[in-house]
Image (cartoon, rainbow, N blue to C red; front, side, top):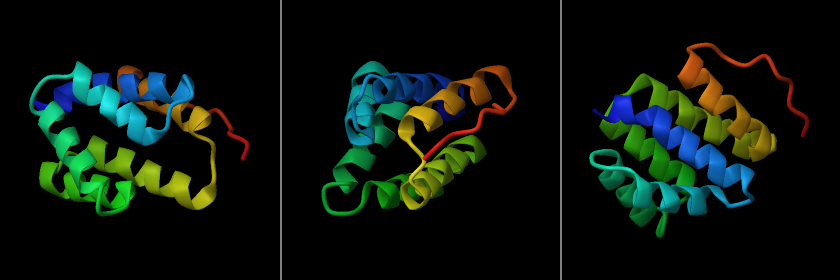
Length: 110
């Protein structure tokens, strides 16, 4: 069930990022707009992010959920944090990848 909700979760998160919200704010928005099980998982991520880094909370969720696409999304978050690629760029890649089944060939500037 989580896997079938993931495209919508990524689209909602992407829209929030493009609107200028932080990743944390985007995930808060997701929890208000999706149903279980995604809602509960992202509420837990937000609760864990109070005492740990958001990226670590997302990695813990990926370990619990065991969904390859979600795990790859979490890796993308970690790479973004380490490389400095803008979220505007990353947010344009997510929906295309999961809605069309293929990656996007766009190049992103730092």
